[in-house]
Picture 1 (cartoon, rainbow, N blue to C red):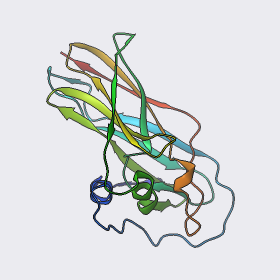
Picture 2 (cartoon, one colour):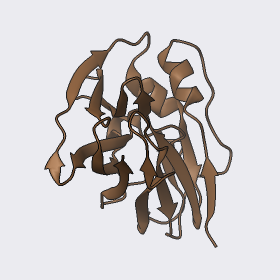
Picture 3 (cartoon, rainbow, N blue to C red):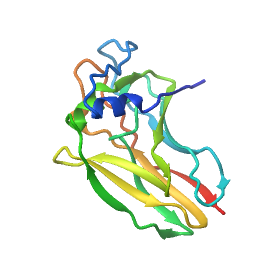
Picture 4 (cartoon, rainbow, N blue to C red):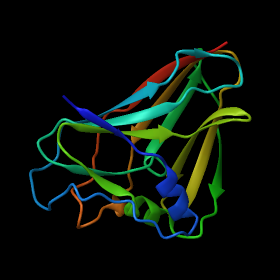
Length: 192
């Protein structure tokens, strides 16, 4: 049976804000087999909700392989929303750079944690309620943290697609290889 760990984004927020943070785990011993069989699923805490609300969204990464792999203990910079649709049509997004005190990749690297075989880790997808929106934080090629926001306040059926896309630059020699699910995951919810 797969065990699921849920880790809050506090480590990412503290590290991005310039506070020294130790977000690590001692579950890993270097060595082992090549990682394969890692999958992701996107879960929504509710199927329906009133206008102005967004359900909790979690990207759950499952390690069904025979070796540990690494992923950040938070979704910022790695649990990436790739699209949002409403009633089958694309929802327009807006993006902007987010200033940080420390390099964003350092926060992702510091938060890497081993995911042992037959375990899963749930990463929160960022949402907001004023206004209602789904958010994603990606590190661009220049190292800048970019927040993309999709509004979700209008009534309709929303379909969110996300993937685990940890930047390769975050890999650490003292951790297993990065978890790299190849499939994107989707979840739906209805705003009434």
